[in-house]
Amino acid sequence: MAQLNLYVPDDLGERLRREARKAHLPLSRYVLSLLSTTVEAGWPAGYFETACGFLREDFPEPEDQFPEVVEAREG
Image (cartoon, rainbow, N blue to C red; front, side):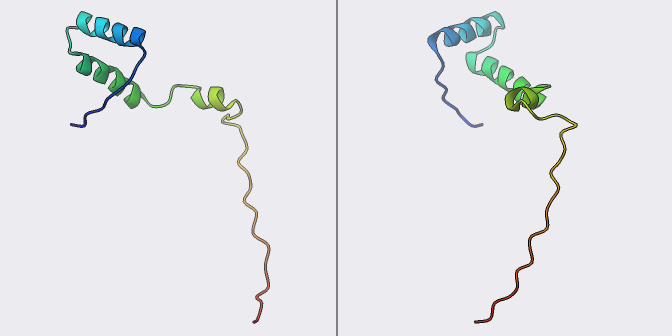
């Protein structure tokens, strides 16, 4: 199993410790449960529309243009 070190603000660290105690879990297992739930869920609905502001399902795909023909040069 990989070991990771994280730096979090003091208030967040204390909240995580408190919630882990309530859940009767070691801190690392509690954080792992939060991360695995979030990572496996995929992107939240509307993430790209919110983050990028323009991506929609009806957004037209650009048409690929063929490159211009270039004549071979001798030399």
